[in-house]
Image (cartoon, rainbow, N blue to C red; front, side):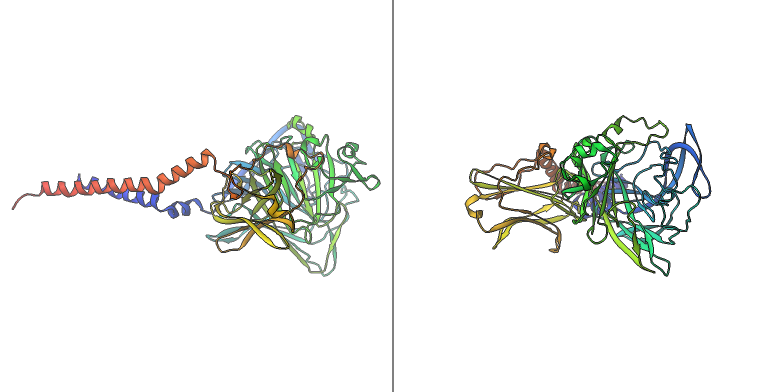
Length: 563
């Protein structure tokens, strides 16, 4: 009996330690791991020769190919790599929501056969994120195996590289306009996942192995469907391409419908405003658009406005990847039967970041030169608009004037979930006026929202910018955003439906001082549970342990025989 009581006592003490010391739980939650797995890809049966040229297919036979994959995951993201078929990031699942950020084709089909649009004169879409080079339109390596290697594995991060060297010379059947030749270039993409971050670090390196200048094209292809259920990825009609540009170059000469969506800026040169085309529901058919003339800011992406879940690509676009290509199959792709051979239209959004301004506009790499840059892919939850973004998160700022007050609303979602951060709001101009400074624990499953109201008369002159900064515990700036201040109307852009999306209204308070939006009932219940776990439960366990100790002592004394 005594031994049983001691065993119970030890169990209770261990449980008490785990409940009382949150670091024990955190250490488990922040586990970082890598392992091998497989994925099944269903597709129409096809055959290729030694040059990957299509030599046969069966329109009535859907088969399954099982690929080997590499999975890296931490508490917040699960990233699946597929080196064997195009060296791609096939999947990014954001664990707090359980949703997929990328697209995967349920049934692949060869299409574009002998139409002259692709290097091998055919294509089959699978999905994910992958490098395309050294030719335009998916390049040469989209369906070929890449070499994979674990280059770093530590408690802090895991990195896996996938590499491919172009030794492919044109053969009969390759369309003439793919004329960059056998470049000898090597592309190395390295995927890194960190222990406690929810972003994916994607480093791209292009290596010219020749002693001469080489002509090439490079684009990173992103097939996106954020907020999707795994295994059923798609973009609903209310999906928006959030891109900080105001005009695009359209291929309306190929698809006339594109010229009817937005106002023409220069119709002869096919330059149009970028407003309504940002919405998937407004793509009545397939089409191509390019940022005009380029992307200057460091972010762009897609938000599923039905559930406010998105994915943003972060990169130094101005210096490294100024080109941006838009492609979708059109809203009617929701009606496609994937089991139809040759019809590859699917409801996803395809965005490309490249070295050129558009396809078939090659650039060059000098003899023995290496070009390298980083791209980051970050999830967003609870954000419908973006003012600025970095690898550390996204922010949105807005304000209005009402009842002689300026009401400011800020939304923040970071890739440092669970960390205590500091947010500050300020007006800047001739001087700096701090409006709000507040510590907060970054939420993994919703945007952190801050509101503040100030008397209009106190900020009526001398201020031109509303600014936000988010800092970590060491005072390092993780995220910043700014928006012009001085136009009290802040009217929504004409034709942009985003203003109709449900948002968070500023909290009304009896005063003019800075305020933080009250937490909802779920947050309060979460606080109660946390309080119970950290204080009440350990205290109760300690009392039980004390009672058991007393019982053991009393029992031992009763059983002790007198001398």
